[in-house]
Image 1 (cartoon, rainbow, N blue to C red):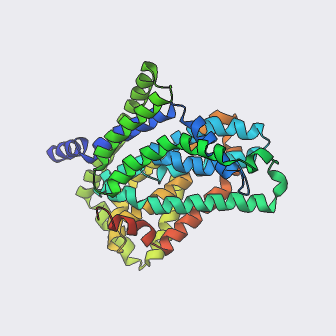
Image 2 (cartoon, helix red, strand yellow):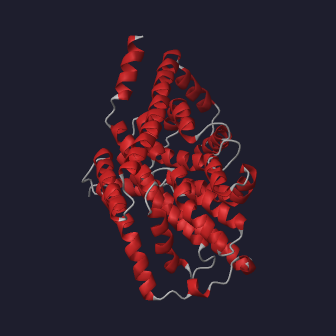
Image 3 (cartoon, rainbow, N blue to C red):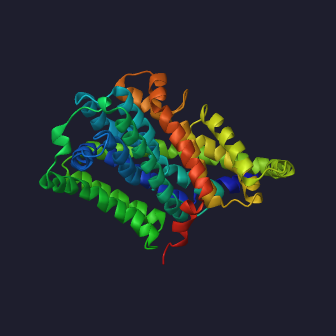
Length: 391
C-alpha cells in the first residue's frame, strides 16, 4: 500500500505533467477565438493554384493549428467550423471535404505541442522536449502525403473540383494580406516549438509562454472576453483532470503488474518467438489499431506502454522513435468507428452519421499506414532533429 501511494504521489507532482494543463488551456483559448476565420482567409490566396484548390485549406490549416493546439479534436472543430460550410457553399464534394478534414485533423496528435506525446513521456519517463521535436518531421511527411492525395485526386477527377477563377488568380496584395492573418499563428509556433528546440525553454516554460501568446492573439482579434476566459479555464480543467486520473490509474496498474512480473514475462515470451524488429512492429500495429477501435488514444497509450515498452527496448527500438510510431498508429484510430473521436466531432459539424464520415476518411487511414511504413524504413525522420537540440 505504501509503495502504491508513493507511486501515485510521484506521478501526481511530476514536473513534466505541469505542461499538460497549460498546453490544453492554450488550445482551448485558440479554439474559442477567431483563429479559424484568419486561418481560412490567410491560406486561401496561397493554395488556389494547387490541384484541389481550397481543399488544401483543410490539410495545411490542420497542420498549422496542430502546432498550436496539441489536440486532434480541437483541430477538427476549429478548422471545420469555418472550412466545412465555406467549401460546401463553393461546390466542393462533401465526401472530399469531410475526408480531408477528418484525416488531416489527426495531425493534432503528432505535431507538437501534442498532448498525447506528453502523456507518453510521463508514462514512459522519456524527455517530452525530445518527443516534441521528434514529431516535427513525421508530421510534415504526413502533411505532404495528405496534400499529395488531394492533388492526385483532383488531377484524376478534375470535374470534382469547382472552377474558381478568383481563387486561382489571387494577386500579391491578397497573398500579403493572407500572410498578415497567419502572422500571429507563426509567432506562436516559433515561440513555443522554437524555444524548446533551441534549448531556451523546457516544455513547461514554453507552455506558459504559449498561454500568454494565445491570450494576446485572442485579445488582438477582438474575441477575448471574460466569458471566453472562463469557458477556456473550465474546459481545460475538465480535460486535464480526466487525463490526470487516467495517468494515475495507469501508474497504479503498472506498479501492480510490476509486482507480478507481467511486463517482464511478456517481454521474455515475445523474445522467445524470435520476431525481427519489423515483425514485432507489424504485430504491434495490428494490436494498436484493434485497441483503437474500442478505446480513445490516451487510454491506449497509458494502458499499454508499461507492458509493451520492455519488449520494445529488448528488441533494440529507440523509445523516442517508438513514441512517434505509436502516436501515428493511434492517429489511425481517431477515424475508425465505433469510438474514433474525430468522427463524432465532424458529425457535430455536418450532421452525417459516423460511418459515412469514416468511409470518407478511409483513404487517409491508408495514408497514415504508409506514414508508419515510411517512418519505420527511415527512422532518422524521428531521431535526427532531437539529436540537434540545443546546439
